[in-house]
Amino acid sequence: MKKNLLQLTALSSLLLSAAALASESAEVKVIGEISAVNCEVSVSNNGVFDFEKIKQSSVTDVITPIGRVDGGVVRVKCSAPTPLTFTATDNRAESAYGSSGLGSNFGLGLVNKTGKLGYYQLRFTQPTVDGVETPMFATDDGDINNVTGLLMAQQGRRMGWAASKTAGVSIGKDFKFGMNATAYMAPKSAMNGALTEDVTLDGSATLEFGFGL
Image (cartoon, rainbow, N blue to C red; front, side, top):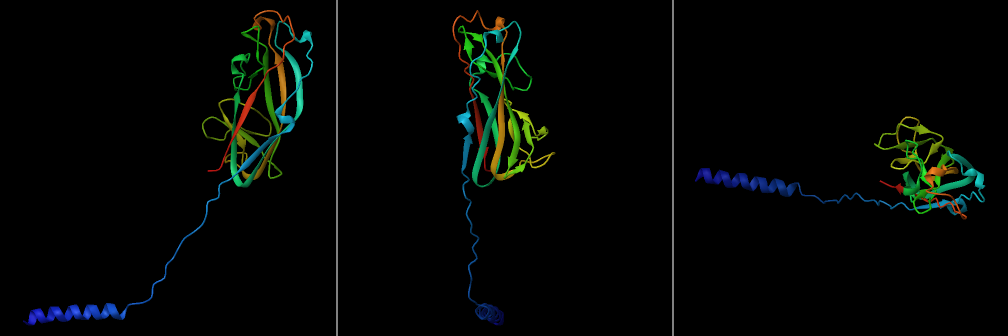
């Protein structure tokens, strides 16, 4: 009986201790909101580079420069600070003549069914982030190892604004760069025959921007 009594007494003491320590409780919450970033892309002149009338003499037996058209400006304005990168896709890839080795030659369209008119290159100048001059980069493996203030659009690579000259993607709300187009006529041998009528340059490329996490 003593043993049982001791056990009951110990249990009663524990219950009394718990009651003596009872207190009010308070709930702690951790709250916040992840806001979706919205970005708006604008291109001056609706993204059109017009080489106007091109002389017939530009068609020769070798690659011939047609000229350069300046004045293009690409601007991306975002609702909140964000990293921003982009890719370039040639919508006339089957008509591009030659290769730069960097994927920077974009096609000018076909002539005589399968002939190639030539190619053009897009160069980016004066890149800024939030109004501050910022170098650009191009990468195909995620490493930022080609940082420069002047960059040609390169297919198959991701491009953007660098946080520094060594690494990192810049974060901001207002991204901008100038752009010009330089075009080259392919040699006659690539055109699948003579040009017997007026031909229109038909270059087209898409810049696709990615932002946020």
